Every structure is written in C-alpha cells, then in structure tokens.
Length: 93
Image (cartoon, rainbow, N blue to C red; front, side):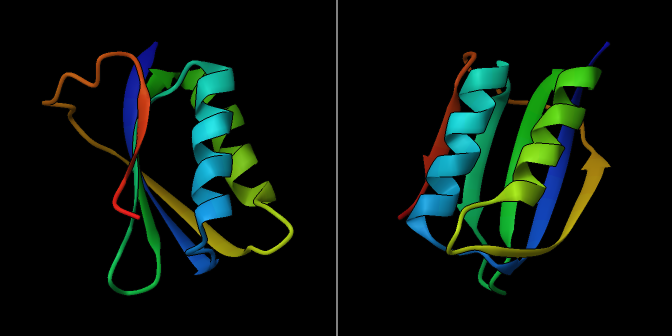
C-alpha cells in the first residue's frame, strides 16, 4: 500500500552530507519527496512510497553519516497534495 509520511529528524544532522544521504537513500529505494532544514535544528522530510519501502527508508535515516548524530526520527502520516513527479529533492542549502 502506498502512503506518505512527514518525518522530523532530531539531532546533530543539519549537514549537506546528511541531506545528500537522505536523497541517495530515497533514490535507491524509489521514495519520492523532499528534505529541508528546519529553523529549530531538525530536518523535515516529506516522503511517499510503498509502506514496506518507507520502513526501510526510515531505517536509513537512523544510520545517517559519520558527521551526523541522529537522536530521534518521528513520523506521522500526511495527505500528499503535491505532484512530486517521482523524485526526491533537497530544498534550500
């Protein structure tokens, strides 16, 4: 079943390498969506895909990169109203 999640990642994670890791993991799994730094130091990810694939994607978010320290990953369902065109984008720098 296809679903969409809003994922908030907490920790020392606002690096270009970690956002690139998220994008690479999404592309490898066929997840579409966006990733963006949040003003409070967290990262917000909107991700859509098959339920089992999204579980694997969340596992990849916990792994992170050598410079990132993930404290928590919080996911909640959301209704996707945008056409993500089958890709995963980094928003901002």
